[in-house]
Image (cartoon, rainbow, N blue to C red; front, top):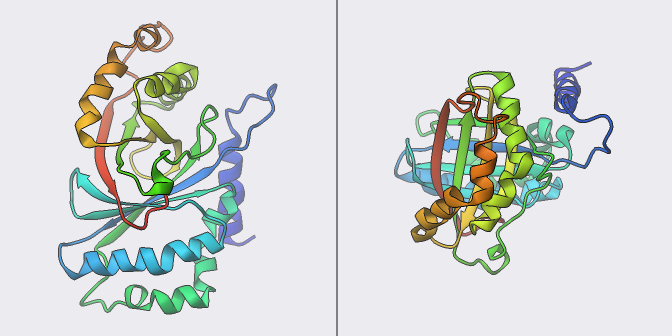
Length: 260
């Protein structure tokens, strides 16, 4: 068995852990979240053109859609370009690079980025995380204004937990009503992902959206004052200890070519 097949089968088995055997398994998507670390100048234009003209069309040909592309607006280490790949198939994400290597149109269109010389690299570093969708939100949901290229801003939040047990409890908390509180507060919830492979495990990542950055504080205030949230967060099941030890919080703007 080659490495990719082994990785795919191992991750599939890991993702199945924790599913309730007595309930039918709903189809849950997988997500790869990439972060391209850039420096100001030619790299930004080169990376943007590559994702727009080569990467997203090639991913769509593999059935990976909609693909999100976002510029980091508020957060550490700017500039950075985030790319979100959703897929119903774990195998597709695990083998995406080998399949892209066989795509002649992708190789030709993306040549300037893919074959950038070492003295003038296309990016400084690329980081990637692999996630599985939460049971309570099994598929990515683009904001309702995306199709019309309407105004939208995204908030990407990652919760780290001090132990695997606390991490599972936090995931349970989302599945026990936290999704609904976000929606009542006026957020568009895009995805919720449990990280299978990536840095700083255990953790989960989710993405919210809203029309304008000016609405951010009002929506979080509505979230925090919601009676259902107060009841949920005050439950002994979830407040027995600090189950989240660190939160990273980023504000992203969609690129003109983002499909989310």
